[in-house]
Image 1 (cartoon, rainbow, N blue to C red):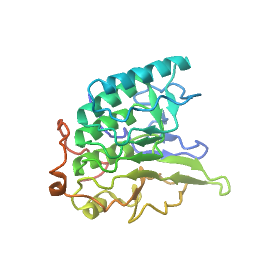
Image 2: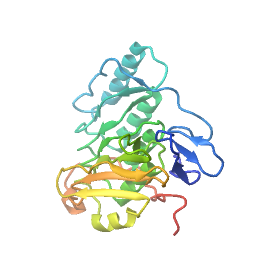
Image 3: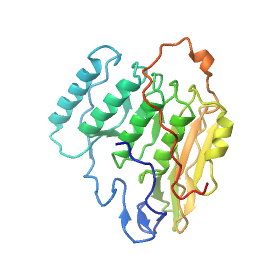
Length: 279
């Protein structure tokens, strides 16, 4: 079942917690990956690179063969916990919704994770990004770079992705600023969503950017990236800290009509950014 992207209670960073958040209501620690008292196992970094993805995952049997290769590679490492790889590059592989669901389920089962994920220039629609959200939700990994440019995401899918990130206990990446005691540095996630099917990106930005809760940095070009956000360790940490290069550059449904159609899948309504947000 698809989880609901909501935090159980209001969370705040506690001095000396090194970015861990504490439940201010019952003093229960909620580290990345702990949901309902269940903690994630230790994360291991792979000693050797995984096999590269084939040029196309749209061909019959290609995805199953790729997941089998990943499974054999993972077994050769002889490690029990989740395996972290530097980059998961699946750009321009012809991935549609059906393939995305199988792919991210397979990666979750194999417990292969990465802080840099590239699925740009595929055929992902909102149902495909929902499968990606379930994959991200399964692991306590801080995502540093997520590239979804050149897909077919609408407001529904993008809203669900931001809601998932805002409720993920490992987002944003938060570290102590050692030259300035009592301060924390938040490192914005680079989220590339250009060339999708979002109508009125400026209005969408205004809807999601909430003072004190969400920080969205938009540029008209690829950079420069924003500097880390400095916050007082006694203050609540923003639940969403995202860098969106070229976010305004979206394409219309009319221009997309002549391109091959991906499998539709069922699109769900966008979930709330936070359970505590007032209507």
